[in-house]
Image (tube, rainbow, N blue to C red; front, side, top):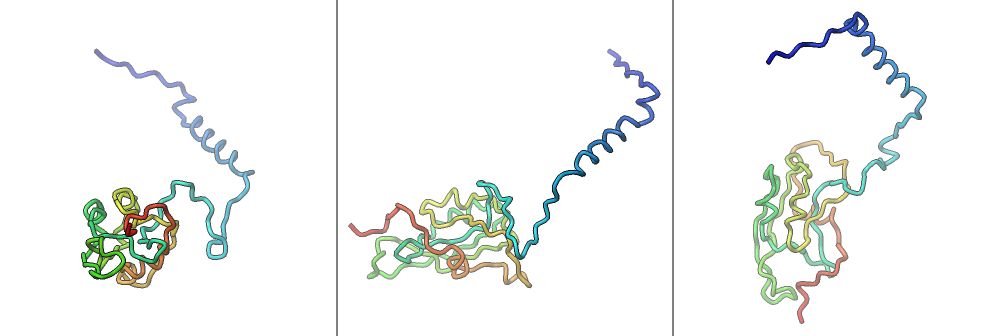
Length: 167
C-alpha cells in the first residue's frame, strides 16, 4: 500500500502561514502584565501545594530525634544522597525502648533530586521536605548537611504520633 503525500499549495509551500501564526502568538503576549520578582527582597510565591523542597530531620515535641536509623530512606534514595551511621541510645534514658538513633546522618544536597521518596518511606515521620529552595554554598563540603544542620532546619514537628511515650 502506497501513501500519497498531500499536494501543498503555493501559500503553504512558502512557510508564511507558520510565520504569521508565530508573530500572532508573540503579539498576543505583549499586552500582558510583566511578572518580575526582586528575588532576595521578595520570596517567590509560585510554589504550589505539591512543591517538594529540601529534606530535613525533625524532633518530637519533647526534643528527641524521631529517626530510629532504620535506613529505609538511605535504601530508597535513587541518587544515594543519604548516608546514615546507626548508633545506640542510652539504656537509662526516657526513650530507652527505642533501639537505635543515628550517630551520623548526612544528606548530600548536590546529589539530592528532591523526589520525596525518603519522606514517603519513613515509618517514624522523621524526615520531611521543607519549602527551602535557595540552598547555596561556596564549596561542595558546605552542601553535605550533617545531622545537626538537618535538625536545625527541620526543628520540632508537632504531630499525634507518640510511639516512644512510656505507658
